[in-house]
Amino acid sequence: MRVLSACQPVYREFKGWADLTESDWIATAKKGKRALPEAVRKYLGFIEAQLKTPVRIISVGRPRAATIGR
Image (tube, rainbow, N blue to C red; front, side, top):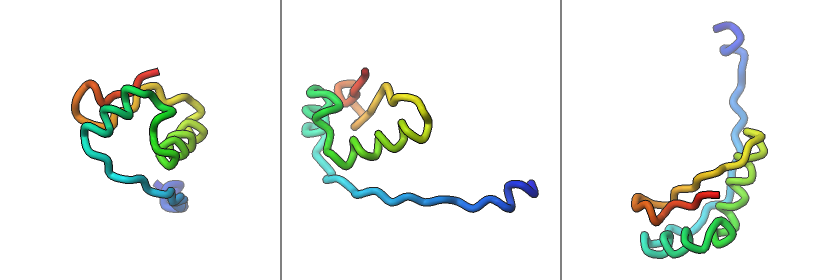
């Protein structure tokens, strides 16, 4: 616990993106990762770089059709 008490969080802010309708997100998912808003792609790129592994599944809504898989 002593080690954790000495830790400081590092926060990173990202530009937000528009809140699309469910049908717009599904249409985007059908087009693939390249169709995602630029801010989303940058956020995913950051996550991939930090984890040193690609994001393979991206869910942009509840329906199965709102999932982007690589």
